[in-house]
Length: 132
Image 1 (cartoon, rainbow, N blue to C red):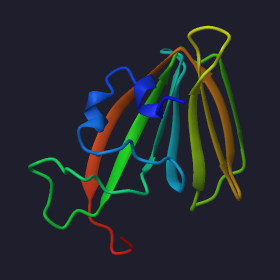
Image 2 (cartoon, rainbow, N blue to C red; image 1 turned 60 degrees about the vertical axis):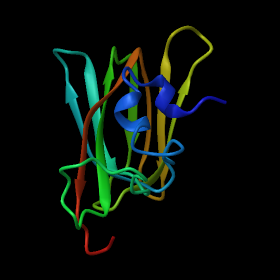
Image 3 (cartoon, rainbow, N blue to C red; image 1 turned 120 degrees about the vertical axis):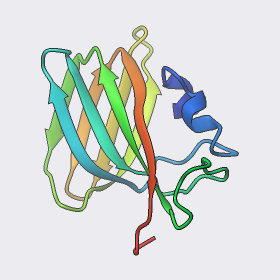
Image 4 (tube, rainbow, N blue to C red; image 1 turned 180 degrees about the vertical axis):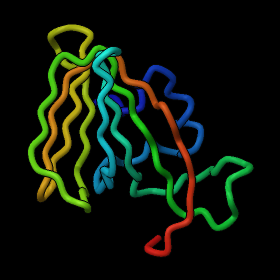
């Protein structure tokens, strides 16, 4: 099965930082936002793995990487539950019913299901966390 990064509009933005695509298990989902005018949704959170090849210019003490995924052409969306700590198993896969992408997140208190036509890595940033 192909990596989730291959479903991104520009996978090279993240693939160049890791020797293998980063896992979406234990994704710390911190923000969900919608843009009704653009028929899109963004998911912001922190990956569980720090890159093998960090970008030059990142702070020396950075130990976490956050991303914002933009789901465009949103066709379905459902969310149940929310907490201040949303550690989820994020899953991104291509649907067989055409060029559609399914995004799901399952955690102890939060679950999310979405279907979109395009997936972008809208932002990628490094920071230092004392929980590291």
